[in-house]
Image 1 (tube, rainbow, N blue to C red):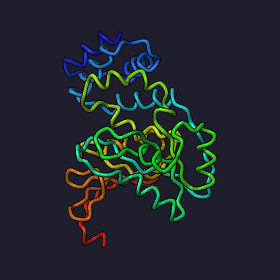
Image 2: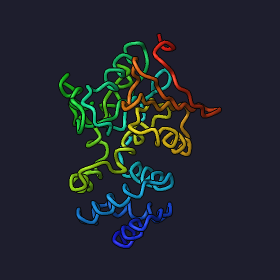
Image 3: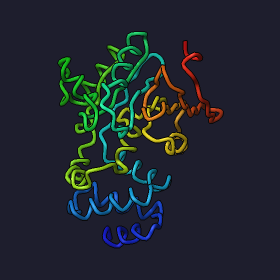
Length: 254
């Protein structure tokens, strides 16, 4: 099946929601070889992922994931980025998460080790003594007690080991770069997401709308998937009532 769908992608065609669901089930189940998966992901990225394709992949990743449900006073959020801006910045989203928790917010931080940046969120939590292999029940307890905890992607998405080698073979961006921030194991409905490309800012919000998200903001500043005080910022924002778009300058943030 994956060979036929890979060939179909090579001609510039989008897969149906059902076809993507089926191939993702096969990939995450570990029944496909690395070479075939890599070719599939490469053709998908070169064509450009449709919203239906990404949603089907997202649903299957969530199905294969391990989940927690921390009970906190107030909403639980995540602050994360897609990666892929190719800049060697420090891990800003994790730093922001500590600030939010210190101010009384609740953060279920989801992330991995660094791929393109100076440090990934997992590297930072591990440096401070957090056990990346903590059992999900323990992470749930930590979030409820301290208002912040970390869900190591490799622990909470064990099926992703079946695509790890294929992603290395591809050697560049795949759909999984986009999907990582959208697959929070705590199933948070409120997120701030840094996005590497203008193209995906509004699209990510619309995909999460179809997952019953509540409040989502995607941000980008020139070539940086962060809030930058010195250049114009581009925001897309969605709450329960509407989706809006705006640009801000440093003067409007001070």
